[in-house]
Amino acid sequence: MNLPEFVVKVVDDVHSEVRLSLDGVALEQLMWRPVPQSNSMGWLAWHIARMQDSRAASISGEEQLWVSDGWHELFSMPPDSQDNGRGHTDEQVDSVRPQSAEVVRDYSSASHDSLRRQLMAISSRDEAVHAVAGRTGGESLEEILFRTAHGGLAHVGQLMYVRGLIEKRHWFPR
Image 1 (cartoon, rainbow, N blue to C red):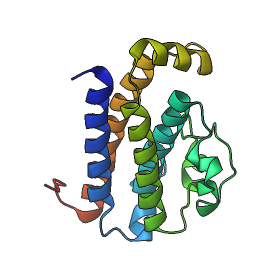
Image 2: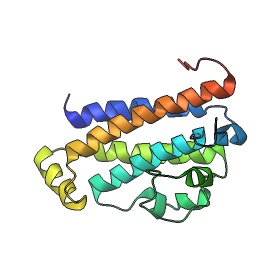
Image 3: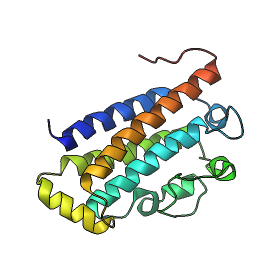
Image 4: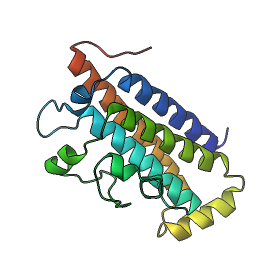
């Protein structure tokens, strides 16, 4: 298994956990924040999807789905491809307001599918490394793949933890 194949496995597992964590969640539960300085399930799932969308676009050189497919409209947010949640203030976290829980699930699936396609298309490592580095200001393909795996795993763990807080129980969906 090469590095892109490994990351596909991680991305698939993260997506599965996101879907399980969001299953049956009402919009008010999705937007609940344990304390004002924490993230909601909705923000965490949105952030995972935004980062996957951003990374798929970095690999492909195409526009992010957030803008090209109009996902930003369903979150009542501007079409800012740079806004992916990194460095968000408490007010910005609170401003991520999807129209429904289904919107978050659907954007998560679209971003996952896009990233998965881009990762599976990496056939020549050397060609991909040079193409990606040229588009990202020097960030290597390996760095993108590492951040994709690390960020996805870290944030899906937080998502599952918040679901457990909402339900006042351990959250092990399997």
